[in-house]
Image (cartoon, rainbow, N blue to C red; front, side, top):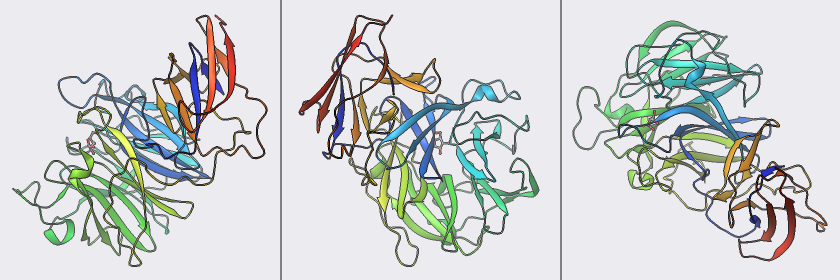
Length: 406
Ligand code: FUB
């Protein structure tokens, strides 16, 4: 566990139902893309900068988090950035990502707004990622954003993407090239929903952007952000990977998101189903969004119910074992702290000031604990970490003194 300590600070072991949404509190995250691998969900997100330039999206890199219980999330920091692409020279436009695994390699598909879709590859879900092709994987126009990839059971992989159109290619087995043409999905009210308000040739139905493509029980799903603005989340299904698509309705209404965009990622994990989305709850700005998650249950016919955005988020799966080494940057809810790259490797929690806290949820102390160890440094005169139960003013169960270490 690594903490850079400044002043008294509270580590909170919570059993109480405090807000767990948004999932990430120390920075702005958007466009969630979950990937289940091993016994964890990896959550890739885009990253809205704290400082918005030109009153538009200001996005330069992509983040990764992981969880084995859906409420405590470990911060893996920035795993990819625009700087990794030598064929562009831009400092903005890192929009909605998706990472998928194939044969032990991890492929991160990212749009670089206005420049096409790039692909990065790594040997682990958290990187290091590298650009294996040194060019855009696809590029037609501005419309090439929001990639979603899926490997079907017959081994054929697909990449869908687009705003305001929806296109796909068949990816080759290497996942970094494709065969055949870029195909265009034809929109009708029956396939992607009748648009309320003005429809035009470019936006004839509800589909706007943010496709999320997967198969479950032999039914193919296309989740998408629908218009008009503010966006809602809708979905269509098909019996085949390339359609024909049948519109199935709205999953999350536009009133649920409170941002002018929304963007969904869906996964099954440990027998539960989850939808990730984003809102502007922490900023009140559509350019400073935050990722949230809800649990849901599919209908027997594969339908997705209408989902309400909540503050509490999903139920915890199992409990957190405090006798394992827990990274400090494993957080259910944090206040005041920041995470950063640690000079010892990995990440650490820093910028800690008096009264800041981290909540970790559902900690199982078993028969009880005698001691607490932390790996710490302080460039002030030190401080103390207080361990409290239930809330930041809850029962004090331990105090860890920290010397100034320089
Ligand atoms: O995050 C930038 C853009 O906003 C995404 O590419 C869209 O899906 C929308 O969320």
